[in-house]
Image (cartoon, protein in one colour):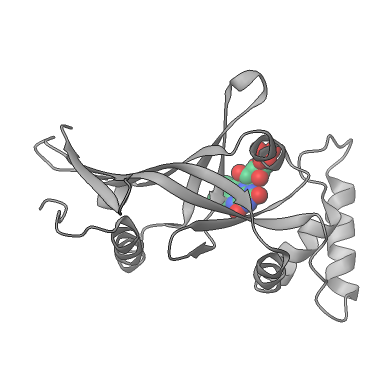
Length: 196
Ligand SMILES: Cc1cc2nc3c(=O)[nH]c(=O)nc-3n(C[C@H](O)[C@H](O)[C@H](O)COP(=O)(O)O)c2cc1C
């Protein structure tokens, strides 16, 4: 089976592939490697979770004091890489990241499980700590005592990635994998089939 070249919009393919990954019970299909340009122009990577697929952007959330946020502030160019081994598919996206409006951050924060919200409050992600036990105690205390869900901290937010290129990779048993690259062009997207 090849990737349908009649689809001229990569977001339609992205949306369908995500739905197919969920339907195929791919573990954590929203998990995606986010690569930024780090200090000294060196690559810097970590996994994040896709929170929303918009019309023309992918959205994830993060504390805004973190390394990834600092790196995006300094250089908007990022890459995202989904890999779903159980269905033999990969999606490689390159594009520009930007910090989303506060309303989206608060909306996505309110949708987080309480224990995730509390984790954001008790842990300054990325800062050195002497002892992890103190964080566990503080987390358990807050989980036990909070009467209402916490508000979105001012330095927590949503980050939007607008792709300039999206490459779909579909594995084939004979190793003649199919690769279809969408590159943003003046009017819409330019499609190129690539040799595996
Ligand atoms: C499956 C998985 C999903 C994750 N999702 C997120 C996420 O959505 N946002 C986030 O900030 N960190 C997420 N993390 C943690 C990051 O990988 C990373 O450790 C953290 O954000 C610090 O990265 P930084 O120091 O480069 O900013 C996730 C980790 C894993 C393993």
